[in-house]
Image 1: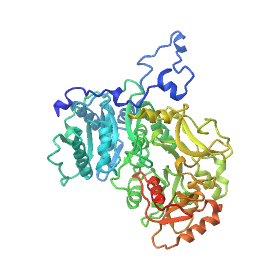
Image 2 (image 1 turned 90 degrees about the vertical axis):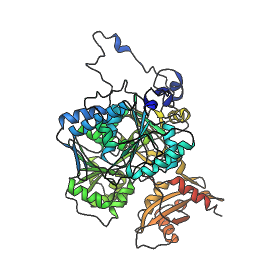
Image 3 (image 1 turned 90 degrees about the horizontal axis):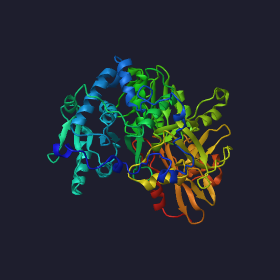
Image 4 (image 1 turned 180 degrees about the horizontal axis):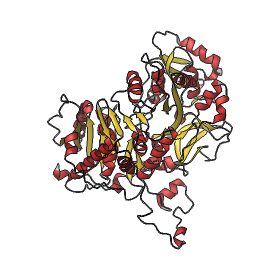
Length: 590
């Protein structure tokens, strides 16, 4: 171990983050972003008396939120996990000691440290401790199998991986696969929770225990600060809904800005109590792990998310805010564990556009819903449906349709637009003309790790191309219609699968629904619906199709309905690429 970490890794930061190019007015970045202006305008230097110095400048980093929280909110509760509680002063002390321990293991600036853990206090702490050691945190999806974990560990070249005891078998399988490839596995730090925690196999020699490792650290350790705001802070692998995950690199500046912007989107003020139903590994918890520190908030951690845990936590911990994909909302409204809420709880939802029927029923339970939209490449949330007071007086159905829009960019972004993918011209604000949703600004990723080609494609034309298609309304609000690859083209007509799914959710027997294209020898493609029914209901495919035909143009109605459970990512996104393969395997319609 000491030999492995006793010297600086031969892998330089520049080589590791080969897919990330720093902005400059020349070179490849300028070429593939289509930049024409001089980015580095130094005219301010001609102003006498102006100086840039430590007194008036520091690189933005969300780690600064922890230092402030430990001072301003020192005695306030930072984390609650069952019977475990910490204050913000204790949390900072623990993070400093862990950062010191990492440094003593040889971790230094630019090294990658991975995690494989659910929403537990250690995950919260590592989001601060890893960058405080100058390293880059890489939070891995807890639903990946050993094969995928081994691929991502090799790709990220993680030096250490923190593993929760319930996921140890996944990590051990990944280590075995790495050794078969003659790749040295990272050092393992096991996160224990009780005396029955399993031990790593004898084949894993470099192993530490989380609390023991932390205890070895120095509480007087001086945390490392980024040299520039562009320094990487995290690598987030995409959810894999369409292909093999790509490593999305976040920088300190973007994380700082998105952390503040996301708390604003959520309507948070000082001392919120946040229930963690969104995985902390997903976009670093939508950057809220850092944002809650800025507000002195309390993190309510759940190892497993269930409706009983949700309703119990709201009552016991006085939860004020939570988040979740539409599937989480759907789980809540169809739960037998519903309880009257003692107060209004703000719930922020993202992912696929939520059907108005789900929005209506979740609000009837006492939740106040705000809708947002974003991607891993935009640090998570990037737009929200900023509510207008005049909409309160609209008829219920129209009000819910407005709430389902994806809205406008938050203040950390420069601009969001809907543009023609070829001409790059902005589409008319008519609510009809479809284009690709594009972003630019400080909360867009630095690039894809070790994938220059994918980075160039994503940034071609000077905008980040989301791959989502939508329309722009006359008030400037955008509305997502579909993924580019999910649009069904039937007889030359574009069918938005989102619109068909919205209708399906209105059927009283439908619990979940997803629509994809099925090959058709006459029409080219037709809509194929995959449906999961509510318990106790029994309807036929013919009835579902007839229901859609009465609420949609006939060409948009699905011609095939398959009843089964829908495959999802750990963040609740339906994996349509799996469903597309199933629809393709059904063969063509005649």
